[in-house]
Length: 419
Image: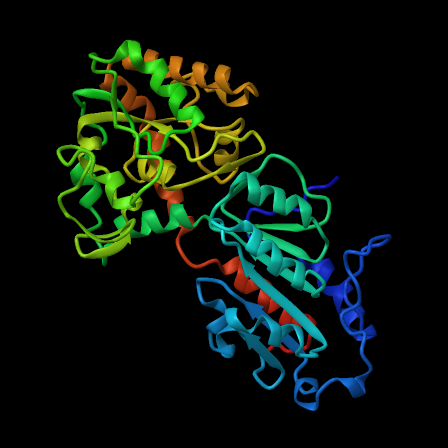
């Protein structure tokens, strides 16, 4: 197997050449000895409607970012040669008769099966771009099932295995939006987080532990920390209810875990200082004013992939040292994005341990040891790392340009680029 990943925009130079030759021959990509991909243009020219025949490129997009609704000049595509279909126009797209078809599918992580149904209908297109704002076991399985040469997957994490055929692109929205909300200046004052948290001032407690919903790794942490309750080592939240309203989840302790400047606007949504965002994106300033470091219980703990959520973004924006309870190679994958971690201040060998409970025990032991050290000395040791990480977050602001670039490349291949 070979690794087709890229840390920036995916490199499709060779694919452009290959697909151009195939388009000229009037066929789609085919995979040798496979019936998964078949020629798209099986009809004779006479069977294609004249209106569709005038268009060379058909694009289907159901992205929430509304890429499918952008004006064609924004995507540098010639409107005289291009048809763009929105979410409700899948059948029109499939029946368009255009010589070249590109499908963009945003996964519904609440209903992956429905997304699979759509992908099965468009998998024969010359290019299929699959985008997901979440990374879960079911989504990783989907990626493996559709590891085909005409597929590009744009994901919010890192896989711990290589794909054989498909291409990977990356877009870390949870990091970018969190950083943008609290550092842009035009939404919330630039120095707001610095003033609220004072990251290099000693705090009465050591680690915050914000659990979220009960899950195996979080339950393990809760049980491990039982002997330290009553000390100043760990400030723990309650668990969220397993089910119910997102608003109920966050109202369990208005004294410490709820920010007064939040105004609830819907299930899981609010405004903070008048800025609309998800409740989970609000910085826990009162918690950060009370604790020096963060013990992060990430969303998932699979050894097959790392998913970087707002849980890691918020401590980075607040310039905090963190220890992560997640899957194997989480820190390694985070460093591959340009971030630094805290090996040398603590022992981060836990990150390479494949056994879940052993890895978590090793990480928690390091947290306990750090609690015994003088905070001011730790702050001096970590300063260079946290300032570097804060600066790195600027690279994750902005829309998923990797997707727009993919669409422009396909326009070039189909001779529908607006020069």
